[in-house]
Image (cartoon, rainbow, N blue to C red; front, side, top):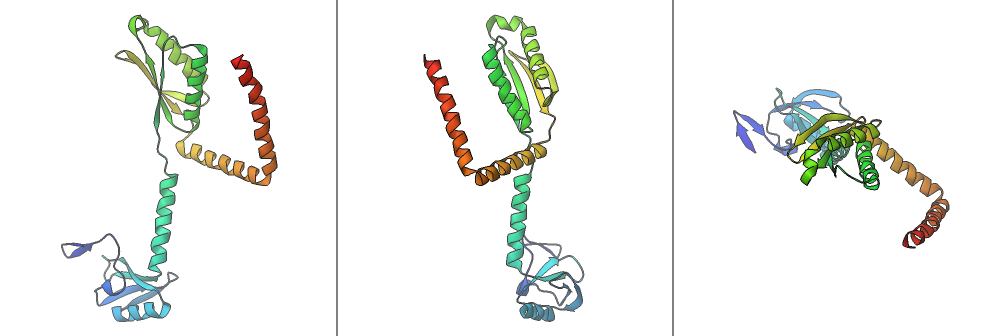
Amino acid sequence: MWCYRGGSISAEPRINDRIRVPEVRLVGPSGEQVGIVPLAKALELAQEYDLDLVEVAANARPPVCKLMDYGKFKYESAMKAREARKNQAHTVIKEMKLRPKIDPHDYDTKKGHVVRFLKQGDKVKITIMFRGREQSRPELGYRLLQRLAEDVQDLGFVESNPKQDGRNMIMVLGPHKKKTEAMAEAREAQAARKASAKANPGRSQNAADTEADVEAPAEASAEA
């Protein structure tokens, strides 16, 4: 504990016999105002209720103290803080790299990743990498970036227009959907899948078996 100008700074409030003042403004277990009472009386009431006397406003005159189960209070506070951190939205910038003369299959694959990132509420930095003589054809990269932006315009928008950066050309796409909305939808979808699987366990297994049967011939054809 560190003292400064007569005031104390502590990570946790003072409780019970750590409170060293002659009197306190007491708040009851249900939030009712008891009034100003001697510290000894407040501690006596805490023992009667089998609760703790917790100093909740040390700078007040007299300090405000409340009767509560401090262990339970700390646990619930920690759970609330954990839930708040869990629901906190952190916008992430993903990156996708493409070549100016990318083939159609690779383009569709890369575009699929961009779509997934935007659906998750993340920004996407698109980098076109030029090599050799490609550097003399920046319009190839520009047209590719324009095409990609148009293909995903339902999910995102151009936040930073294409610009040359050395041998690369960069564009940033931002999601229409906020990160918090994307997280909420993902949790709802996950809960729905779990509920469906729990309600129809046999059906889920049959669906998996059907998918396996469908995939097998495709693999055989590819090998052929």
